[in-house]
Image (cartoon, rainbow over all chains, first blue to last red; front, side, top):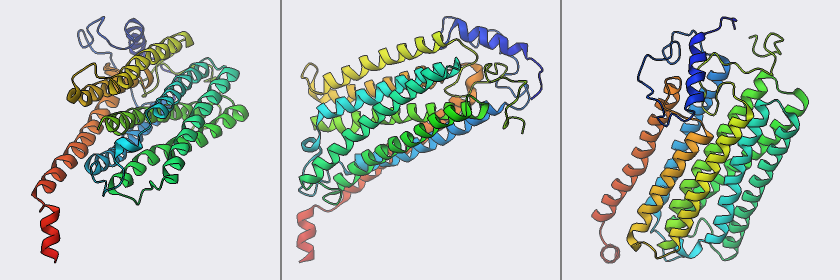
Length: 231
Length: 137
């Protein structure tokens, strides 16, 4: 990595400061583009960019996989084969708690990244720990739901609707569980290796992963639970 | 790969700010900016989620329109997450991220809407169950 500064990107930072979310306090697009960014003239992107972008592509493919499960559920929604309907198995109260846990964990995850940017080890660890704890609460609530349903004889093999229901919700739960394992690994890595470049890159990826899981959960609690409870 | 080992020229205390944006990332900013961002995102999310859960269990709006309202709220909340948590913006330094997202959304739409459309047609063209049973006799 050469040390050649690109004054154009200083301009980019100024624009981000003025209007962080590009909500239109200034007309972006008006005036000339920031030279070097997004036009291939600034040389190869840094590893930080490439890692983040590659992981973004992976997340999108993951979301495409989830969309297949969503489509299966949408198609099989009425296929109860004389068994319980979706409205009968939904417990909106528990889903509200699950949603709150996951949303708050997304928030603390971002706070941990704010601490990472400050290179504050203690607060990074604290917020990562809280994130993991909230994730654990989420997984336990979901497990409780599945066990409760199984106790009533409501299992995936009962009907097409239940197969797709357990498939979709279970796949998301599996993602959260594996994300928790990743989170624990990251906590150990920061503790031992410190904020090295590649560790920070991994933290960026973990953040993206955790927020993407929350986005998928928005789809699940809306389409499966809330729309199911009314049906 | 000088990136792999610790590089004293680039102490980890400084972020590289001479670069495009990765999703979920912003150039050098103080943590106050991040916390502000997270607070905004959390605030919007809580409002939208609470609205969704409230509407689902109420009769305040016309019944058949509730699913539509829920979907609109969900899409709005996904947008909030993308902007405030994943930092996907429309800036020139974010073009690649937005294009990838647009393609992803296209595929998701094709899979979802396509499956529902095709399977609904098949379902309508299928012989009613009683007739099928009679033919098997």
